[in-house]
Amino acid sequence: MKIKEIRTADLNPEEFIKQKVNEISAAVGDGLAINAMSGGVDSSTVTMLGHKALGDRLKTYFIQNGLMRQGEPEQVVSLFAELGVHIELLDAQAEFFGALKGITDPEEKREAITQTFYKDVFGRLVRESGANHLLQGTILTDVDETIAGIKRQHNVFEQLGIDPEKTFGYKIIEPLVQIRKDGVRKVAEAIGLPESVYNRMPFPGPALSARVIGEATPERIEIVRQATVITEAELSESSAFQYMAILHEDRVTGMRNGERDFGLQMEIRCWDSVDARTATPTRLPYETLEKLTLRIVNEVPGVVSVTYNITPKPPSTMEAV
Ligand code: XMP
Image (tube, rainbow, N blue to C red):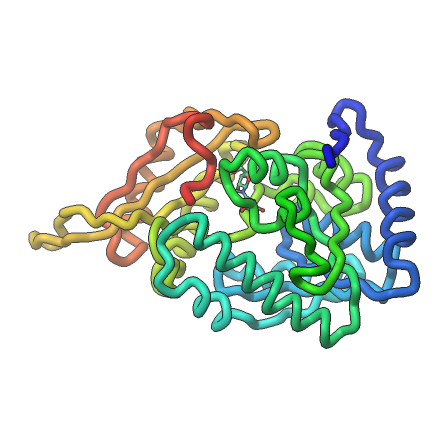
């Protein structure tokens, strides 16, 4: 079924909220629902819509998959506690790293995360909680790119002919599927989320594993995590749409303390974009790039080379995996 897009220019956030709250209430009825919250604008908005519609009958989880950024789980839980929403932290790191072990192909990596998330972790939560619905923040761009075969977004099923009820044992509700990122930001602001959330930089569902080319081991994720802290600190003033550090699979010859160091290489990307469908690299000041590079090679163990990617999307995509 073709999804009817609500263009951002035509979106009335208050009306949208009312309509979606009603739709969620009608779909879940007297039942229970669960949702996963990553702290991103999409899942935060869905969490607020869901709690408005269902109150305590929605249980919200933060899945600690071991792939999140530094301090992210704790920050998200405490921010939502301030908004009156309780989030349960669920440690599933061993499960995710087990599923990612030995996988280097990007699509297989996404599939491993999808299966672990929806079948294993959520399947279990649904069985234990008695919930029959899962709320999630799929947006139209996720669906478009999956259908086009560009990237299998981890949260798209029905449009691929997968019936979540048969495959995973629960129904999926996607309140944001008619809008895009800029539309979600408007709804997020209207529903009372703070600016740090509604203007938050996008972050992919597969999290830091989308930024490790090749196998996403705990050690390689940790390297990207450290580089991400530095990249986000150094580029926070850039007002770019999104920026990221990526760990390459190949090593290159470098030198440290006068000795050969066959070390790691990282790539920085920084994007200007409105809706992530197309994007151009930000023309960052050379001084900014220089400072960022020096911090990464000095502070992240093993890195001897940092590059800045200036390819637009298309033909690039924004994430490397
Ligand atoms: P790409 O790499 O497809 O990214 O040009 C476009 C936007 O989508 C985000 N992204 C994802 N988000 N699950 C998500 O929830 C995914 O699998 C995924 N892949 C990419 C990316 O960060 C960018 O903002």
